[in-house]
Image (cartoon, rainbow, N blue to C red):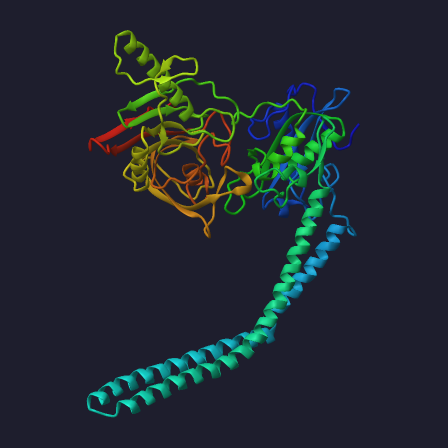
Length: 572
């Protein structure tokens, strides 16, 4: 019996193939394993203070070569500075050996940090900097005062010149004052140069130590990631340096390889266990700026884990990622159309515009749909003798209508359903985008949110309010967004409560800015409503679908100048 495998009851079925770690709904076996781990964590009093601040835990349901079923458990990073707690997954690479290169080098870097801090806080350095600043202030004051004197003298000379005083003598006086100003500046420059030399020499010593620290840190990171070697079931092994070399960032981000998923898969692969089901859940408080719900399940991160897992999952039968799969929808319901604008109903689960994967977007599908419609019209008109219909030559020698060009004017999240507006020309796109930016297009969303007891707001039917939060991208966990009061961009949403049920609340949402995931973050974040939208697998809890729908847009038509409201009935 393997001591790190916790065996599960025979009546719990395990999947025949591994779920996609980037988009999944935990099955019965993964939920059982996560519940068991949560029970264990609730009893680990020695870990409580650290993990209550927030940590990701993961489980991997496996099948042994003799058909037994169990699960492995892991945590991200370290707990109490250790990665080797008994019964938990070991690190992919154990770099925390007391006398190993990592900790030895880290001690050197720590010592260098102390030297840099000591040099930066040196009393002598502070005195030299203060003296330099005082000398510059004295120079500026004396030069300014003498220039004021010269201005007064110049005005007096002008009056004396009008009274007939000798012009040559006035010129000599002016030249003397200019020479005195140059001597004054040169005098101060000599004193300041001496003081600047002392400060510069000290600053250069600090910068040299900083460069040395950067060099040591870079060398240590490269050494570390070259020793993080992962495997897959087809017998390949690669270091993290090799894996990330072909990614846009080229080098692994800090902490790569220390998340739950790589630890779990590495152990399963190297011990010939069949991975059946994986799940990761958050324990404790939400990190500052991020949105993590205690005991909620989350997908593996994109920035740190995706390149690693794409390699490790080679040869393992894995469910497809629905975010990257092909879209089977062939047509969209058109809600409004005129010569310059077309609006459609975008179903939940569909991209608005083409992404990096193979999945078709609403723009792709609508373009194809309009092309088929135009081809049908061309055939009808040709049969009716209408030779004025515009055609284009095909590869096979026949004719068909020119493919329509569509220009997106805004976007909806993939999981959000509702009205999507396209322009039929570049000029109309520019006009509509400007109207969106200046709030001339009023968007109304319907959302159902989870009522949470820890929300800072006690809302009732008819209540209204406004949410303002600074948002920016969470680059390691794309496409997640986070609240950042230092660098985030302002985002504003108005809301109104339509009705309140026991566990949910139905809202109207009016976004006044168009940040990515704005409505989802505004609802979920503690500084917003503190109530995530039902089905929000990024900021709340996964369910059948995200209950967020773009129900209407209202605007003055740029060409007809008539007020238009386009509506799309909410499906929930």
